[in-house]
Length: 148
Image 1: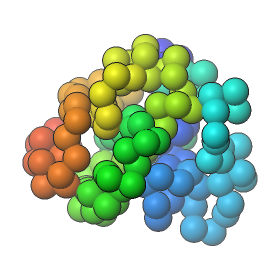
Image 2: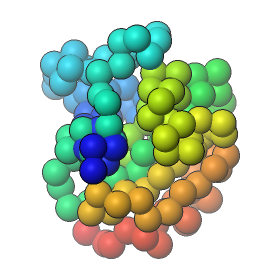
Image 3: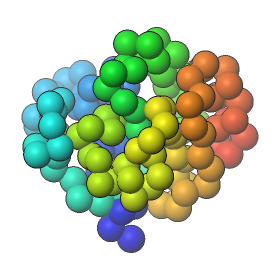
């Protein structure tokens, strides 16, 4: 499914980053992956979740976090803590709703922030809406992730 691929690509790029809100790796700039922080959806590169999920070929589930840019400062600390706590069990990727409005709407992640969708084997397994406290996220998502 193309939607699954798009999320894979974005998630892979975000998962390799030290910062859940920046795409890329510590060794390479985000632009090397064809993804950079964007100010508008006009610059969004990926058209489907399949494209994003394809960026993350490992066997771990991928947690896509769609968030409103206006709430970034409020949730960033908990999201980064959650990403660190779950790093051995799933890959966590954050995507601004404003950068991918059509994709967020397609996945019912456009009205509430954050909206998290856990993908396992390319399929959505569970969703969390407006949950930001890292212990709540880790508890609810962790039960769907196998120990690595």
